[in-house]
Image (tube, rainbow, N blue to C red; front, top):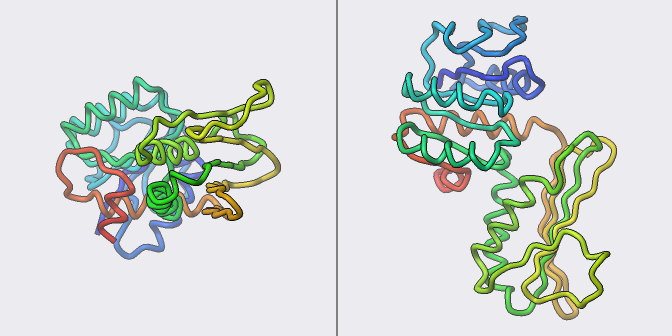
Length: 252
């Protein structure tokens, strides 16, 4: 059994995680932390980590970047493996996360969906094989309330491609103001916003007389919650280090 301390317990994703964990015989939420302490499940919710009395094996954080420092301090003090799911971390916070992973086990991924991370793995393989004769474009679609563009997942896909190909990739976000032919080293990244699209990422490899497309579509946010719970079970009893979805996929 993996005992989980859930930060952001009263947020939308926190409640989805609690529901996923409740249905999992090998995971349970023992306590939550949230400014809103309204209780909706079979575990207590505290306004700060300092009030938590329950013993947890793993932290899942789906809260807010402003709480990042306090969560890292708590994880270090209690030596608890942490699954960081909060998006929008600054470059400084990501650097601190990497530094903290030398002291405590930390799991961090731009996207908690197993499917998305499998997509990234497949994209790496395709990029290595196709880089000489195919142009690569990324299209991401999200709901009309999402404020950042491109998505962190689209950038993670682009970074995976860049790390794989032999040339120095150039990320191109907008072509309307530049009248020139497409460069061979370009990776086009395009963002669409509309309606209630949960998340869709497509990677297009366009060659001569043929096109290969790899695509992932999230139908609900439950896929991210399920990935977070899987990551928590994976992180139980792990040693200090920085872990990612690629480690979890390799262990499946």
